[in-house]
Image 1: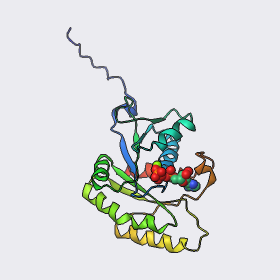
Image 2: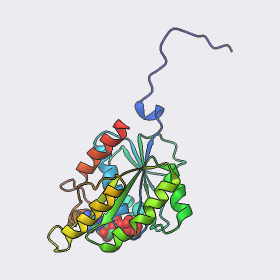
Image 3: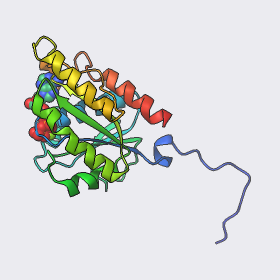
Length: 212
Ligand SMILES: Nc1ncnc2c1ncn2[C@@H]1O[C@H](COP(=O)(O)OP(=O)(O)OP(=O)(O)O)[C@@H](O)[C@H]1O
Ligand SMILES: [Mg+2]
């Protein structure tokens, strides 16, 4: 049967169904720097701000997937899924395994629009691994660096000021930013949103994706 063309406007699709999602990868070559926590907390904060968010667990360890199911937040806009997930979203956050493999890192960096780098501080080895990561980001020529995010941050430790200055100097070399640190907080470790320590980061992410 022939389709009848009418002057009526097509039904309005919701924002989430018509746009290509922005993809943000959270990565760092080392383990235990706060990647999964960042994806979970940031995903929740973005969902609380009205964004439809899919978090993807690309780590075989599946810590994020276990956490997502173990500590349900009941946020309708936050889902755990994979690329094959049928529902469309505004944002995809990728959690990654500790990555010392150049090819795998570059592959995920080519999928992403933005890279967010959690840096556990003050921990010297977290900074020492960064030049390799920045080489991969340059090689992938795709994801932009949203910034370095100090995690588990302990401002009272004597070495912290020196550590932060070192990270800031490193970031400046790459024209990148050091974001407001996430403190070493028991509620974060317990997968709770108390005090919303990732709220400021969520605002940064929204600003970044809306202005570029
Ligand atoms: N801001 C924080 N304050 C206190 N503890 C934290 C904070 N962020 C993360 N942690 C804890 O530190 C540990 C490592 O964090 P997380 O699992 O997020 O790191 P990861 O980089 O994903 O590690 P993995 O290499 O195991 O994937 C976890 O036990 C987590 O609960
Ligand atoms: Mg993890």
